[in-house]
Image 1: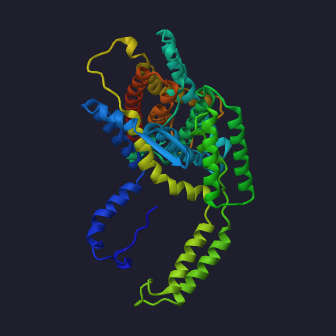
Image 2: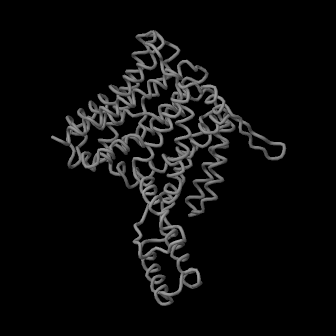
Image 3: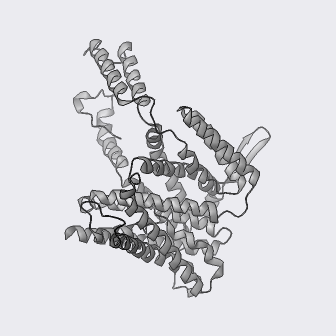
Length: 453
């Protein structure tokens, strides 16, 4: 969250003036809504180029690179791919959980009447893609690929919102709210699929320990404890027990997020009164000729103002903001790079070698676009839902196709669905890449044309 600081208000380091000409545009770009999608896209393209331009062995060596954590006689060793997918991606699911909780409490899903449209659209965006995928697999008699039905169910929020942002004024404000809510409900469904259908064996004792840890986090919350360290420690143990239980470890991130406090320490009245008092004290000891470094009283007051602001902001928002950039600009691009590397076919392959690819493309493009639009139309016809101001049904169709950009979550689910079947994983990657690209282009084109009309 950047703030514009005028030149006369800056206290420059010796070389800072020249450096700011370079750094300010970079900071502005990093703060923009489209940057996460761009970095993800660049990471995926880099992986595809590396695999297809003769560096496949180097790519695989990097992916399988062993990383070990040791503490005395205890140690744990896994590949870089594993640490990203089962470790760091927990933070992505944690942020996703914070977004879900926020939207349910005060956002697009907080009012049942407003949430009804989003929920109905999301149901269509999950049911029809799964049906289309399963039907194609059934018709082609590819029984070893049935478990991939969950792959086209999710929406990549960063990519989809990034595309919408590129449209600028062409996309109505309500479109952002609906697409964000839709993506969140889709991702809730995807997480449920991961937990329920892509778990092979359950270790009950570890699951009980995980439940106990979650209960401890719940009591920490209702006791009013807001120190991050308690939730960090609890989250780590929750991740560890869920990892040992056989349920996919990333669900720990979502569960831990549900326990994050939503109330600040203080109310707005206290914040306003305290800040006014600090500002007045700051003015009383102010000296234009003395920098803040030499004025200990002013420095102490500035630190106090920072602490007051921290006491008056909700942890659910503050922690999400703190993690947002590291996750979207480091963890997700690493995930995309290590999971998107796929060998592009040099010639048209046989049908049996493209069944999963075609099924995912059709499920992401037609399943999402038609499923979301159809369910929304039915909801409108029976009077169960209503369109927001400024939105028309063609906007819904465009959003439906945009929701077919499944990239990150689809790649994640495909790795679970086809574990131990590298040929099917490769097919799934191709389907996800081409399906997401096609869905994004169609959705953006529809919204562009509708806005022109």
